[in-house]
Image 1 (spheres, helix red, strand yellow):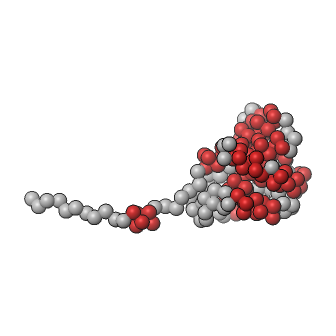
Image 2 (cartoon, one colour; image 1 turned 30 degrees about the vertical axis):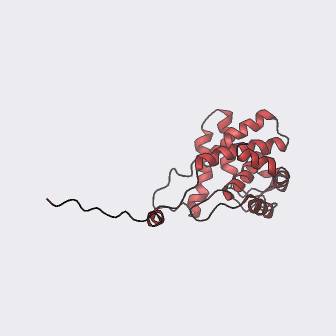
Length: 193
């Protein structure tokens, strides 16, 4: 019997090129989101207990994003995107616990925009619950600073500039101004400092 043929191992660069692109660490994102939401709420004058509830509820903001859709519906399809807030809020709102009621409120209203061009209800300004307005700001900032399969992470200063650009359009200008005024402290919270 002939000796086994040794196969040359491919260069590391070739193997790396075949690997799927890096995906954001959603568990870490959810933890950061909670810390940022609590920190921002405190800086907006919320009491410590209410801000703590927001920290616990905020990570549930995307419940329903991956349930109830068939494989044939792209996650970017408007119908799928617009159904997620209602589906998530229904899942969370079926509980009688106040934490889940807050999480349902956030989930339902997170995609609303300050200018009224969001969904699912097209709410604007103060019609959007404060909890969802806070989480929308911190979710946007944290998502910008995370690497995604379609783009690298943005630097904090670029993400802050992009957040400022959306003030009064997508986001509550008072919440954005508060985030920007306390950006150094909030970024330290995000980073676990």
